[in-house]
Amino acid sequence: MNGVDEAHLRRALDLAEQGRRTVTQGAMVGCVLVRDDAILAEGFHARPGGPHAEAVALAAVADARGATAYVSLEPCAHHGRTPPCADALIAAGIARVVVAAGDPFPLVAGTGIDRLRAAGIDVEVADRASPIGLAARRQNAAYRTATVLGRPHVTYKAAVTVDGRTATRAGDSRWISGPESRRLVHEWRAAAGAVLVGRGTAIADDATLTARDCDPVAARQPLRVVADRSALLPITAHVVRTSAEGAVLVVVGPNAPASRRSALERAGVETAVAADAPALLALLHARGVQSVLLEGGPTLAGALLAAAVIDRLAVFVAPGVMGDPAAPGLFGDALAPVAIADVVPLASLEPETVGRDILLDGWLRDPP
Ligand SMILES: NC(=O)c1ccc[n+]([C@@H]2O[C@H](COP(=O)([O-])OP(=O)(O)OC[C@H]3O[C@@H](n4cnc5c(N)ncnc54)[C@H](OP(=O)(O)O)[C@@H]3O)[C@@H](O)[C@H]2O)c1
Image 1 (tube, rainbow, N blue to C red):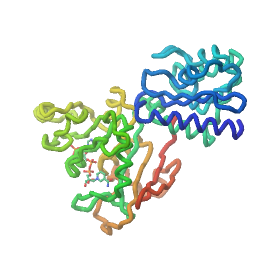
Image 2 (cartoon, rainbow, N blue to C red):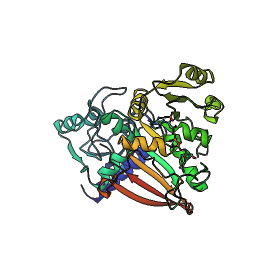
Image 3 (cartoon, rainbow, N blue to C red):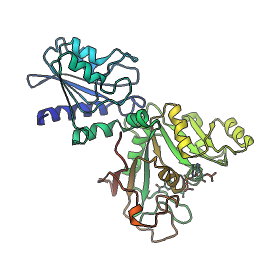
Image 4 (spheres, rainbow, N blue to C red):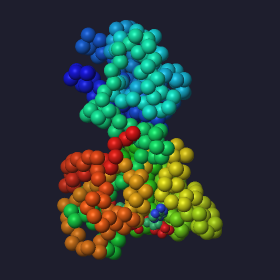
């Protein structure tokens, strides 16, 4: 794979990115058809059940014979909601296929590549650890985590002062981050399968948790989930009162009083039972949620960290200092390591300036 191949794969990833808000189930995929150094056609997977990126690109050109297809994800080889893309590429006379990442879905998992090779097509797959291979896997972190691990991908988003505090000791946290950061979070909500908070945050911040400040306007809302083991969320909470603006699920513990559950349900929200954080994620997975934007406070975040189910951190570091050791940090004390050797390591950590804040993008683990 040379620099030209990589540039076309980058373009395929950019195209795939256009499905970020709509493809909340399944994989985001982009495809570029190139012949004699010229781009013939492009396509991307725009919605679940809709035509795949390869089919879109092939439909846009009368004759693709001898072309190279650059795809951000291995072409499928099975009849799902659409016919197999590997067959379509073979039938179109494609000479070479360059793939950024394999598809972990059991019905594909290498069979797409095998079928192309069996038809005499030259297939090249980016190294998993190469920059483009890793970028392709990270782009589909939600799909890959859901497919391989059977749970949603979890990104913990939070805002901290420079000394790592998420609220004052009195519980005030509005606003630690600046307006640009908060706007970005609305974009993330628009692309998330679910937004998750604990009851503590739902009460303290009384936030709506919808995707509002987006451009273009969000066409769908994420499922809003409140983890509320004791079922003590008041029906006057904003998230409950705005249930008409998008679905709300309150997840209670097994011992939650039935009367509290029915009060919440009468107020317009759905309830479900999960014993702990992994069970809560399993419940969301069963409902088809691939990605969770965790916006909860340190108690719930600590429980998820201890259960090793936080995959990515998005921490806005704001230019301010709390100067109070009693003010809460990012996580509760569920882990409480004694030795530095027990610190949870990150696979990578990158800074980005967002308005007056610095966004720390940290991956605890790379997608499978
Ligand atoms: N700066 C920021 O980015 C940011 C973000 C969010 C929140 N905050 C601040 O954080 C504070 C709230 O913190 P918090 O820790 O109380 O909020 P939280 O973590 O969102 O909510 C805590 C509640 O979650 C419930 N919960 C449900 N399932 C749980 C599980 N498996 N493990 C642990 N808890 C579970 C617990 O209910 P039970 O008691 O019934 O077990 C607990 O009371 C507020 O001051 C808020 O402003 C700041």
